[in-house]
Length: 123
Image 1 (tube, rainbow, N blue to C red):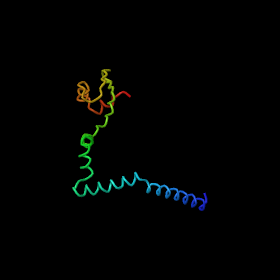
Image 2 (cartoon, rainbow, N blue to C red):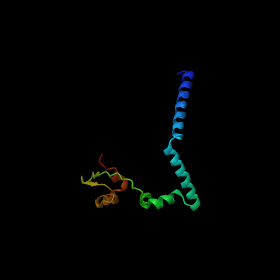
Image 3 (tube, one colour):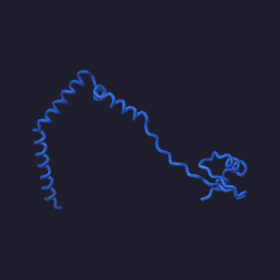
Image 4 (cartoon, rainbow, N blue to C red):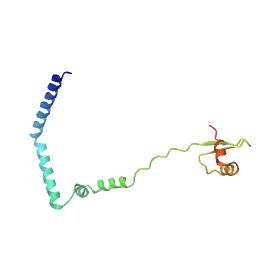
């Protein structure tokens, strides 16, 4: 696109946005909302209240529920542990476990050493 065409497209978009802005300025509903916001800010300043205080007064259940969810963050779901199968090459015995707290596995580690037993894991 040439620079002149780009300029004219931007100028047209600007004119459309200015027309939209003018229509919003003349909107009675928007004027009422702006007036309400101004009056609300004046009241909050007069009484020393924040927006959070106003929400707590008008909707206490909303504020309490948001605090409850913020106070108790969701626990991340743990990935399920993988079953490991150990095969003792000396005896041919198999042990299937998800953790290292198996009685037979502990006995093997005590007898043969942890590194040696970990090498017995079947692929």
